[in-house]
Image (cartoon, rainbow, N blue to C red; front, top):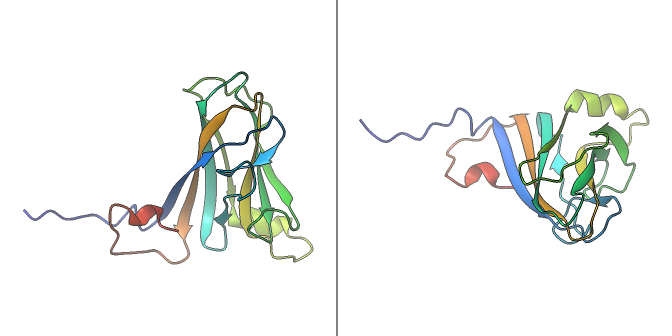
Length: 157
């Protein structure tokens, strides 16, 4: 039997992992450089989205809050609108995971002023400025399913 690479799941989801190094105890948009270059998920391309965050370095209280925002720019700054909050959490173990999800329909309903909300950014608050973690975005039911995937294509931007 030939070695066949299935395309069923990989063509229907997008998974991307990011390092988050906030360097602060204030709320910081998820980014590898203390909020300077926020990471985002373009929800014009998916029906559903989610984010999962797991601490990797815990200097104290770990992650204490995770919030998802929709905005009309990739920096997460223009027309930032709260989609979902985890509420207070105690992500102070390497085994902890904080998870939030949303829908494209939900973002469209929040866009009451028709400003083009579509980019989702994640804001994280940590108890100690040395805390770090790994953020994973998941986009489900893409508008344009992909094919001819490779082992790394599922995470391509």
